[in-house]
View 1 (spheres, rainbow, N blue to C red):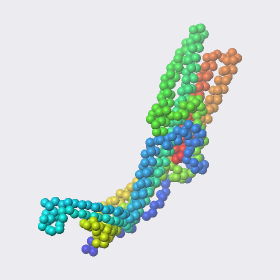
View 2 (tube, helix red, strand yellow; view 1 turned 135 degrees about the horizontal axis):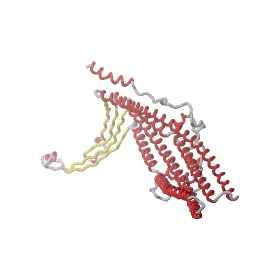
View 3 (cartoon, rainbow, N blue to C red; view 1 turned 30 degrees about the vertical axis):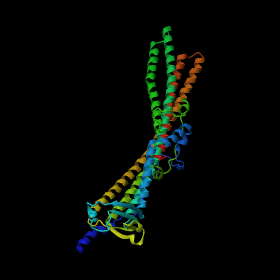
View 4 (cartoon, one colour; view 1 turned 180 degrees about the horizontal axis):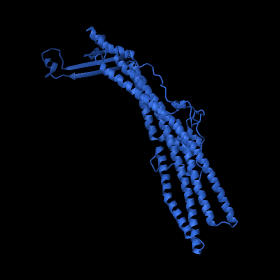
Length: 466
């Protein structure tokens, strides 16, 4: 018998020696410094969209943060996680409840004790029953399993809070992207319409020259082909405007096609919003600023705590229970000394012959921790790559914009030369139309480069976590 008991206790002792221990933040694969990003200190203000100095963008993002459905769901999940954390904390405390009943019953004389009524003098068919009491129960956290579950629930609440911040960041970034796309599509359509009018005028001039016999029909044909090409592109720009507007409506919690107050007050030819490059700080700053990394680390913390809860199953569980109350069939005596009831109990529950299942639960918890650690390390690697790639794209967009500005300046200079030549009688109106059309093509390319730069800035903010 002693050998059997000893054999049963060996797994318990081994489990006690293998307690999870305090959580220590793991080493993660972070570079010591950025290669493409700058090293300016991160600001404390998370409202990065104000850098674009665009009141309409500010208003849209404010509306989106208040009405977006993804944020509403994340907020609801946060409330659930906080409630679960409060419940886990309350499990450490004694639990008590008061109860009371008053009952009156008329028994059948054809069944049960009622059959004795005709034969027992004074035995009434009518019975009263009164009960009142206060019961208390306390599960003693002998092995720390309940506290470990509380730490896991608290980590889940931290994860839910970070997930809410991630939803807000994603919403703000998507609204900014959709707004920039809407601005760019509107400006591009306006330029295309100007260019179409010029090409149509050029076609008229070419046809008039053909009619006079001093022009080539090929010039008129080329003008018509160019005009047809512009007509083929114009519907795409209208589609881009509509889809971007619908996307803005949905992101701000409105049905597609809804009116967006103030949006149409933005002039189609207004300059695209610009902002300075965000401060990237140090790679280690991502662990605090990127919400998805906070989520991943909180999940790792929770999985570590659940190992402690699983290891606690090796140990016996004790509970204390008590009851003080009254019980009587005579309601006039309820509350008297003769009717009082006092109960005290000590409970013991020990999975003494279930250590194989406990071993499996501990192994599963340790496996979940390793999975969470791998996910955390992978998230850190992805986050670092996002930042480096975002700033590489930003650098390329800045160089491309500089080149487009130089090209547009050159086209503007050529257009001025053609105008001067026309005034001197050395150029024709057809030459002016062609020069103006080339300038609009250059302006469209410049607009696309400006939009690419603004989108790259939004991508940098999103990669940095705000």
